[in-house]
Image 1: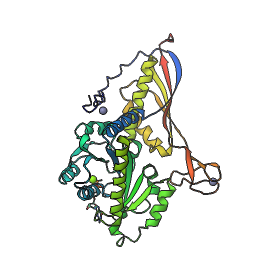
Image 2: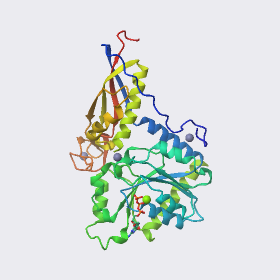
Image 3: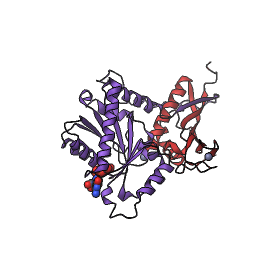
Image 4: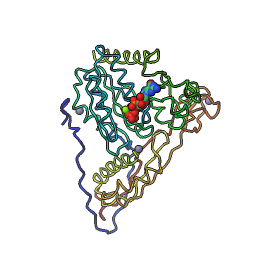
Length: 250
Length: 120
Ligand SMILES: Nc1nc2c(ncn2[C@@H]2O[C@H](COP(=O)(O)OP(=O)(O)OP(=O)(O)O)[C@@H](O)[C@H]2O)c(=O)[nH]1
Ligand SMILES: [Mg+2]
Ligand SMILES: [Zn+2]
Ligand SMILES: [Zn+2]
Ligand SMILES: [Zn+2]
């Protein structure tokens, strides 16, 4: 049972195996169903959002390919907002606890979800992780998804905002190659722009065009974790998101 | 391979339909999938036998209907097909379009076999 709200969304129970039936000819029926295949995930996602809203927490999901700079951005953000915003992080990773350890070293709570061979987080995994977080004392909860530009896009986690990172070394054509992930984002961050002078093939203009062509309609911020105007714009985006949550909870 | 997770969710829905309708066996399962759902029809078909093994759907045939992406243009109102990474109006090339098909990932239909006497 969920400690926060008493709901019964515990970890999924094992299913009983189906017993084979005798092979006699029966009556055949065709049943029209028409439901979203992931409707159970969507239901848990909506439930997660009630957790966040009850506590006035802004929940943000970060998605990108492996190594685009998700954890680095979180480390720099936590340090920059120390004493101003109370932050916690749910870390998704196939195998290691490394990223949660990096976040804890910045002095904020982190829960590591190791997915084994699952290439994405789903709403139930996030709900399980919520049990170990002090939601009442938080302003922002980040979810760092498994580094993967395909699979996480199909699973709603119930967060308020989805972010997709595109780092300069990956190339400016990534939105065209992974349209679903970029299209579904509310904010796109072009990261590691300090490397632009070394990677002349990367054109910020082409990256922006590519984002527009896949149907992305949000803001685009260019930044490096080392600070500067783009990083300040990111902090501003976060601050206004928190203010909006507080206003909604009040 | 999130298609396996999708297949497992699909099988759970199908098991519910089987239970509600007193099915002895599932003959076929029809799903519709658009490119903007993030699911590959081919990968879904590959993952399906793994998820179905040992369930009521073990012998069922999976039919995947792929739905093309369609957009409606806000400027010229045309409805045209589009590529998932070029969501532009096929008529005037404008990018002010709304997606009207291609995002779905739906269980459409389940064909079941019940006992000799229909149970209604
Ligand atoms: N030059 C430069 N390097 C960066 C920047 N941000 C991160 N990096 C480097 O990129 C590498 C990967 O960074 P991470 O923050 O671990 O990336 P991640 O997206 O969390 O990686 P996964 O969790 O494994 O998917 C590290 O070597 C970082 O030092 C940046 O702004 N500029
Ligand atoms: Mg990381
Ligand atoms: Zn709950
Ligand atoms: Zn996958
Ligand atoms: Zn048009």
